[in-house]
Figure 1: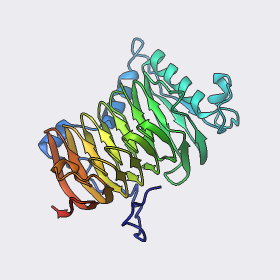
Figure 2: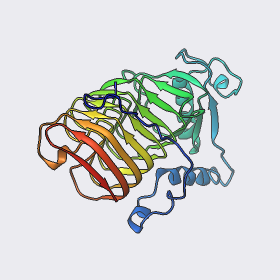
Figure 3: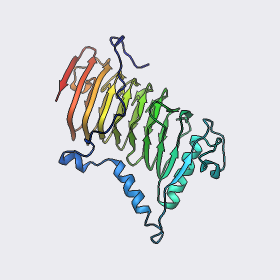
Length: 305
């Protein structure tokens, strides 16, 4: 999956997750008003320290030890040396802790492949941080269905998943998820959002969206209410309709992003059918983007600026 006809033989770069060059804070005035949810997480941690009458409430850490989904008691998931706690239950306990104490639950996922299924959603109403061992080391297989709360996914790979909408990640009522130094690749949606489908926006920082496929719109991501994309690459995604790289509504801020080798087979001559980034409402701000994509029967567009 991931390479369309006409793109065979091309090297598909994986320039993911390099060092931050400072542009995360060098926003324009408009971009500054659209701060990343990372700062929300920091605010939650600080506020939680003064909860319960001023007594500090620390974030609780949970540790995944196995790739299965067998049920285990919560204490075992709190043990860094455990070999029994699965990803689903670590997330469940982290969410419960967050709702009870008002402080994030942190889920540490080691190197390896771990399973979740979109057919059995992971409902998150509190603040949960899923922290992998690295974008080439921690693989989450089966997709994520996020139905509430605040979620940060860090140093992980989400790949090889299938769904009708949001092949890799489906985010419904999530407040504003953050994807940091991670890879969303080789996922497929029969309708929209091959890699990501989000209703309330998403912040993508120092990450790679690569090789995802949508039967209709948004091969890499379908983003309602926009979000933030900084220091990232959208590469080698495919769509049968609009926006092979990104299909975006309003309130999106893009900085230092490369959009390349994305491919749409849409026969439309409408500008919305753009293979790289398709924008269908207003309020999108783009700063320093490189675009080089393919569209059947439409055009090949190159732009730097």
